[in-house]
Amino acid sequence: MRMRGFTLLEIVVYVAILSIITIITVSSFLSMYQSFLKIRVERQMTSNGEFVLERMARSIRASSNVDGATSVFGISPGTLKVGTNKFYLSGGTLKLDDGSTIQDLSSDASVTSLKFYDSASGSTGSHLIKIELTLQTGSGKFLESKNFFASAVIRGAY
Image 1 (cartoon, rainbow, N blue to C red):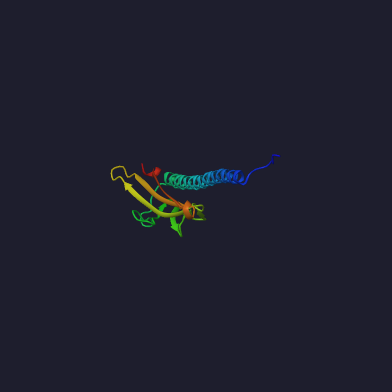
Image 2: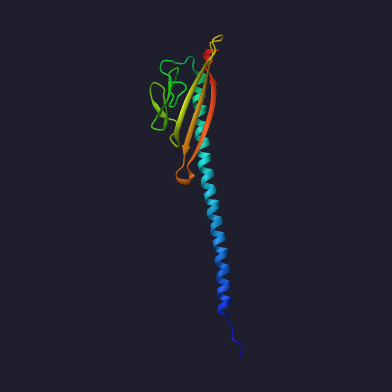
């Protein structure tokens, strides 16, 4: 009489194969999830950097003058006062003081460096403001840092 069923050796082989397939599947899912988190952090930082630079460039272009006495150029943290708008760093957050309210421009990311440069042309009287900004966002092994650069000419200066 022949007995039906599995031998102990067959069960051990099946469990080993199933374990290997499970480990490969779980590690693939974890790897995909980590990639998703890293991409999300990078996208958030890029979005914040582009928004901040665009806001500062728009304000610079709309201004007619640079307040050289209030502005701090060439070092971090820099300060820029153009027209009625003042951009400065406070506790890792970029702030905009427009004379009536103070806005946080970089609430989703920490600003680790902010430098302004004023390239004034003596012959035309124009001012080119260069901006160097370093943002940091994320935490743990997803901590990312990225440099952003922009420049704008003050409209009233040319």
